[in-house]
Length: 412
Ligand SMILES: *Cc1c(COP(=O)(O)O)cnc(C)c1O
Image 1: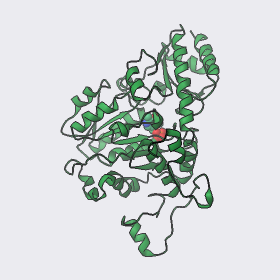
Image 2: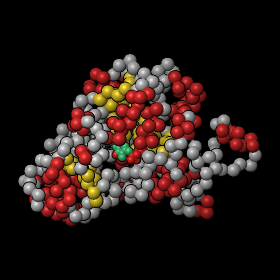
Image 3: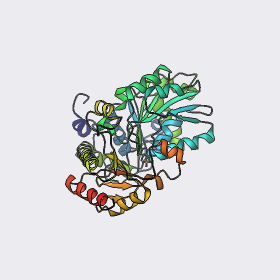
């Protein structure tokens, strides 16, 4: 299944061996799984046999979701979590300890910036690059650095990370590169194939697609060589070879923080996931057309979208994301008041804090998702008082263009 296209791999890449020939993986709504004898359960708990024991550790419906994402991201194994934030926390803390440093991109999702702040209480410091270019990451690496972190497409800064080059920098210093691929999704790029070591997706967004379940998932490429001195926690898991990182997580932090995904939500993800390729195709096309259209209006609005040639990330995005640019567009409107007036004048988009729905969504980040960040951190994250973020949906593009034109021109 490695040589077929994205949608074929998505639909046929995992053989779940469903009972009764069901075409969807059933919801195994069971907290625990019974076994024939004590020895069988002992073998599962001591990692001598594969099997299910307790849904906080694993579950067949959840595992079916994990296997699908592993195929789509081109990884070795995945762990699904209750939210994107839980997946990020687990991905990071599986290898970090007190005294360690992280080097991170600056245009990150606000929740991730806050998570890095929370980690300071545990003796973990994060340094942010000023400009998202490979040299900036290298300049911040010290002997305490233990990982490099970036988003494929920053939310909402819309900067694009040169994954291949940043991975090269990371590996030159013996560091793993962790990438949040939420905004791009594996449909646009598979960071593991470009050299990243671990990929995290907030599957609440495009992967689920219908905004009916919160979840996150992390996928390990299995290629990083964990140095026992720098990553002492991984030492006992060396025997798992390339699965060491995932084995440590599932036998440790993931299990012990109770970060598991519910079977019901895994089912909704498996269902939504089937149309990821179709939705992304439409959403990226709509976003590009809307961005070009809004950019052509003479209405005092500045459009930011990697698909526009004027974006400093256009060439990189074109190469790395295979000619598609994601479905998030941002507008600078001149003032907070005007941003609010435009948002309130729009008829189709929902005003809410989410991305990746089938419906078009709008938000004023500075007063909502980024409100807890300092002004300096907001600007680092590409958030301004007058900024509107649009998550472009699958509506008919002419309707979207008309709605935005009316709202923007009516509020000149
Ligand atoms: C939404 C989002 C998250 C957090 O995911 P949740 O599922 O809401 O916890 C992390 N990173 C990015 C880029 C996001 O857009």
